[in-house]
Amino acid sequence: MPPSDRPRSRRSGSRVHGQNGKQAAHFPALGSQEKIRPGVIHMFATTAPGMAQLVKPMIDRLPGVRVTDVGFDGRSDLILFAVDRGYREVLWSVRTIEDLFVEVGRTLRSGSDKPHLIAGRIWRPERVERALSVWAAEQRHLAGTMTYRVIARVLQENSFLRTDLRKALAQSVSAERPKWRFADPAQIEIWISEYQADRLVAGLRLSDASMRQHDGREVERSGALRPTVAAAMVSLAGEANGILLDPCCGSGTILSEAAAVGWTDPQGGDIDPEAVEIASRNVPTSIIKQWDVRRLDLPDSAVSAVVSNLPFGQQFSIQGPVPTWFAEVLAEMARVTRPGGCLVLLAPEIPLNTVPAQLRIRSKDPLKLLGMRTRLWVFDRIGAGSAGSSGRVSAGRLRGDSVW
Ligand SMILES: C[S@@+](CC[C@H](N)C(=O)[O-])C[C@H]1O[C@@H](n2cnc3c(N)ncnc32)[C@H](O)[C@@H]1O
Image (cartoon, rainbow, N blue to C red; front, side, top):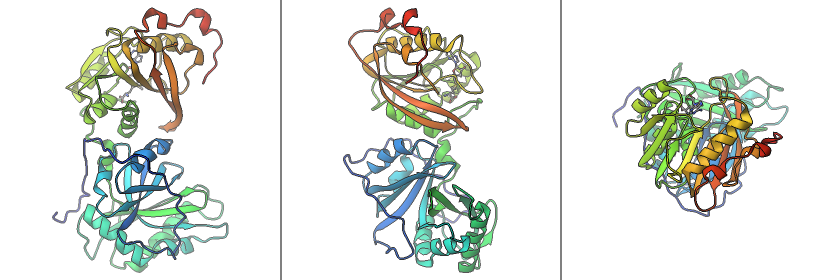
């Protein structure tokens, strides 16, 4: 690959399959004395906040990859892992990862620790050299003079400020690499994150925005879902098999992710005609209809999975009282989903008494999107036959407003 000033963008539309049954090993924080193991490189990935528990098993199942730790640095979840030589490539196709890094070092901090001491323990020439060789293989050839910048994230600022750590690490870098110049934007981004209380990891960023934006949307619409979160939702629906439906599809992010991982018939709709037009342009291979999710233009048991980001939050609202809306929507989703299928829904709360008998909750996980707390719900469609009108919740069941 010829040298270039632009970071290389690495994309793949394929779903990754790995080995099952591997346990995540506990991995102690690497100190300055930690030996470098030949043939193994340490890396980490960031995900949307709350997604680590979901993405960790996906990474752990990859051949040659072992998750060693997880955390949260105040902005993103982090997943740390060791990769055997020759197995790095597959990480680029994990669609739930926002950014990928090669690790430079890890260290612990104590209450009296100073930023320059932390920086000195993290930025050690032998480790830096190794990380840079991975960066060069993934990005571009290294020149004597490179531009760099440092990004620091800490969980608390009691003993020093985040900016002090950033400056200290920049000083360690410039002392060890005197020809490198600070710049923003820069060719090399060095990130240091406190990913658990008093545990820091630093790495060189290998990815650019295309990793989290995937192929991008041809037409943008406000309130669109992060593609990495849409990818996680689609993965929870299981193997591609039959129709995947997003009945509140907005700009079509979920449908586009479904198409990228092999769902040959993703279908959607929205109450807003503008959304229908935008989604039709973003996912031209999908059937997109204008409809109300409470009355879907589909036969009973027509789809294998319903995957949807429901209209809550600052941008969108539902029609009428919450319990009535959920009762009608869940009954309709249960009706169109075949037994054995599932529903994967993003919504802050789902009132317990609105869930029809044909749906059984499998999981509910907290997520934070655009600073808002929400939840990822998975329901299995159980029972034989269609939910039909018997799937609807009676007014009597709607008394009370308890939540899961
Ligand atoms: C959170 S947005 C979905 C965003 C989408 N995931 C994306 O990436 O663009 C929720 C969508 O539900 C739609 N909506 C609201 N009420 C609806 C209803 N009763 N039936 C169908 N769609 C509805 C809104 O127009 C909005 O596009």
